Amino acid sequence: MSTRVQISIEDHVAEVLLNRPEKHNALDMQMFDELAAAGARLSAESSVRAVILTGAGENFCAGIDLSIFNDPGNAIGPASMAPQEGSYANRFQRAAFAWREVPVPVICAIRGVAFGGGTQIALGADLRYAAPDAKMSVMEIRWGLIPDLAISVTASNLVREDLLRELAYTGRVVSGSEALEIGMVTAVCEDPLSKARDTARLIAGRSPDAIRGMKTLLLSLEAELQSHIIGQANQMEAVRANIEGREPEFGDWTDAGKRNFGRPEPLK
Image (cartoon, rainbow, N blue to C red; front, side, top):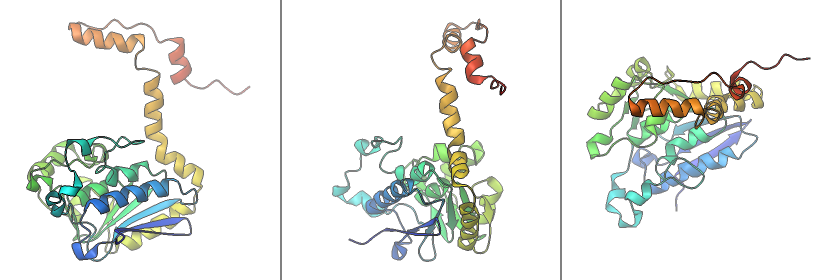
């Protein structure tokens, strides 16, 4: 069985290569699974400080390989949409969401096409460098599908909602230059892989503790703060007031709230 995804690690930088150039790196079931496995492997590599995600040949990823719909052995159906153990994502979503779960920065280099699942995998990275003539599309509508590789999470703070809806409703293709204008990519450059390598080397020279901390900061903070709010008296009052159609009557900020959200005690 051929290897769809190749990993190389040098000087604390991992390069992940989608390696199916004869099919423009289209996503068959093996590719989906190997991308998820690559993310899991790199999450466990303590020496890795940055990851580059790129495609072999002229293209990043042409999206889903339609042959998977004709293969009864793939067992595509409602059951395959369930989250996998240890993740919020299902078997398909893992190919994109795994790069959010990797605890170090992931940089995607986009050349040629990044269609459908290819665009969604790229959106799972922290940074995206694209050639000006690269082609990106949220293309699932053409195949009677919705974009479901975690795009509601990965694109929500990148692309304005109405623009994201337009792209999903129409499946239209945007250039790398337009993708920059609407927030889908970080920068446009003639050689996105070279730019990705330069940035990865720069990151690899920083404190790995600080880099990993920054990667997880926002998500961890959300979970930590929410844990001190949900189910508490004021939160439940907000729910009841909305249900009953009245103005809420909140209590004072509690001692617990002061401990969890207030400024730290001065050093003695």
